[in-house]
Length: 426
Image (cartoon, rainbow, N blue to C red; front, side, top):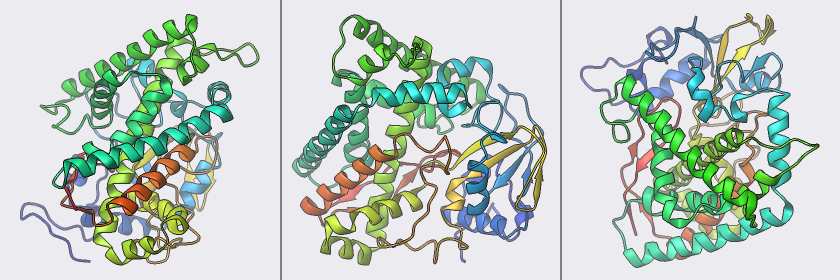
């Protein structure tokens, strides 16, 4: 594999040159990162890395980088051994206590607390509500593509198309008024893009921590104010259902509601928008697959969407902590150690996916982990995400089949495989 390496950076030729905890690694071109994870997957056992240095969190003893599909699946199936709640799942370092108030939703919990929250939230998603949201996705996509055609070529596909659909659906779902869409969009960008200087200028850790906590506080306050009003003035939105939900005498606290909203905004908005953006890029770079999809837009959509999610892998990783000594696939994981599940790498594992870097809209089977591995933390919003991606590409392929992506401006992040800006032409 040939890679375009800047003159001040040596190409990676062996696994011992790789350090996933160094920011420099995540600034490398995509081809270099793909090659690095290939080298890691070739190892008989997961490589153990030192943790990154962070001023706001204690440095732990390190972590196993779980890069093979089989290991990710097995660890996901053993949540009692590989837990999410001890220090958090969305960061390698243990989450400081002040972060838990805003980012301590069920993605960072274990049973029984995780099961309790998921039970209450799932009860709020009634069949009638789900059907309404599915209809809303169709209406929103029609409007967004129509406005794209009115504006003409040369726009930023991320901000004008890909980000607008999931943002509108989630805000409408929760009952957030349209005047607050941009507010929610900006704060969610900060939460998942805090390491990118476009969203948090300066880049020092104090600035990042302050920006994260402020964004979390502001989003939580927004939904808590709405929840207080909906408790007395319920409507058909999800906030009304959640604030009034009573499952076996259990209700969500306002803090739990706020954290769930942040999770919903971040997971449902950012990740879906990145899948849509990267989907357009894949179709542009693979005109044969685009032509194939155009021959039967409805028929190819289910497999094409799964392939987009596999290759996009919007969430690079989740972290787990070992609760007791446990041997898995030839590796002994000791109590207290960390394991970081690199879904992005698992979705490119040649042991599972034939020609894994090829974009194939008919790929079958496609057991990707783009929505997480099996188990209690499989993405709660996977159905909605699939619906949004399907409907958006149906509208684009039917009404703007000639649309193509330009050069992407990628998010600087180790956690999210994101595209910030993507010029498009048609």
